[in-house]
Length: 193
Length: 180
Image (tube, rainbow over all chains, first blue to last red):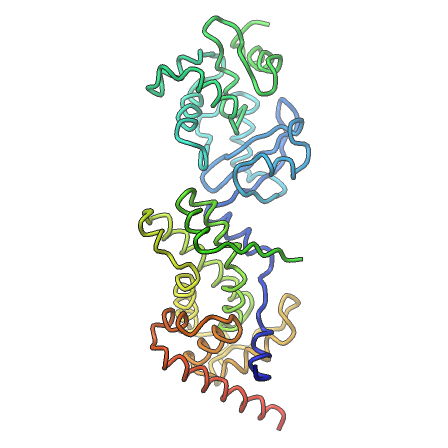
């Protein structure tokens, strides 16, 4: 290699680290994540250009690294949610009112997406049996799979899997424990204490 | 410290087909250095280079989200990205600069984010023709094979080789004049 060719080769330079983050977040291929408060304590909330992609309480994932390992998408930490989204998220968390809250189901399989979308229509104060979801998604035999899909809900509280109960009237399972499910439902007035 | 996660074209394409966002993340991580590095020597500032790089990937994402699996399977990532990036570089250089200089190249203020020699090389490369500059940067800064440069610039390989050798000869002359 001549000296000029060597000098040119040495010009190869990497970008500032912000390029990757800005690019991926701008196109919606990656999320931002921030902490916020909720009725169950501090939570991580992740979002894309299209809507909320994940929510995990800090009692499940204390550090950011823990959340990033759970989250199905690439995410970059930021200080806080954008104002509009924060308002909608807190309305959802505090009042259970998630009308107009954009949810992004990217990266979620077709079946689970259908289950969660159906679950998202259940208003606060109401509970529905697992079979109701199975019927809603035109797959009445899938009650068990519905339970599994809800158990893996990446956006709990905002997609209200806690409002889905057993047809025999018992509370059923909940990722954060039956006791918390019970407390949430009492809080929403869906059941009596 | 920089971590370069370089995924092969095969892996990137398979990723894009499986999940666009996951595959695209690999694509950006693999190719951002090359696109930025080339853009840095083909544009007038590191800010412009970042703009070109980001816009290249944004346009790439938009295109890819409209492609079906069959088309995705034919993707050759690096030359395709460079086709987009060179178009962006070209359309930028056509715009009037805020501070025009006789050779058409603005001299932006030095900033901490730039390598120290950036302006020096910007001036040197700025004196080449667009074709020579592009060929020299792609070949000798980024190590792209002649065939790929020919594909990206839509010029015959012989012409690319001539651009490179004339470009290098010009640079040698320019550097000699600096010392004189």
